[in-house]
Amino acid sequence: MNIRPIHTDEDYRAALKTVSALFDNEPEPGTPEGDYFDIMITLIEAYESKQFPVDLPNPIDAIKFRMEQSGLSAADLAPAIGRTNRVYEVLNGKRALTLPMIWKLHDLFGIPAESLIKPMKQA
Image (tube, rainbow, N blue to C red):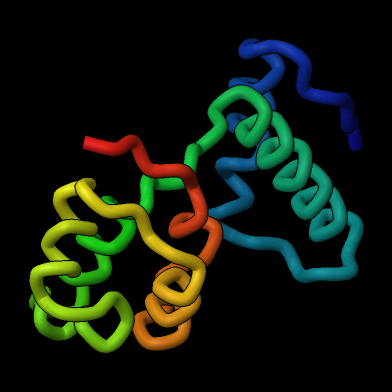
């Protein structure tokens, strides 16, 4: 087993090439090949998270995504946000989410709280 840290794009491409064959025939966990596969995947994921960070969506995009995903309307959000006109104010960026709104959106609709607490730019 030749395991090295991934520092460069060349190292990254070589690591991907090494493990790509293992995806087709994944080794058994606990075997030397399985351990090698786990370690390489961990190294690749660490490099990717450092080099290609994925930012959380802004709160409005997170809400709209959940609405689209679940077939929700603005009226469906009223229990979490308030009257329908307040829902539209939030969706249009004219009103910021309050902490109670954030928790209700999270609890009722499963929207990640991390996405909802990201500061919104006011319109």
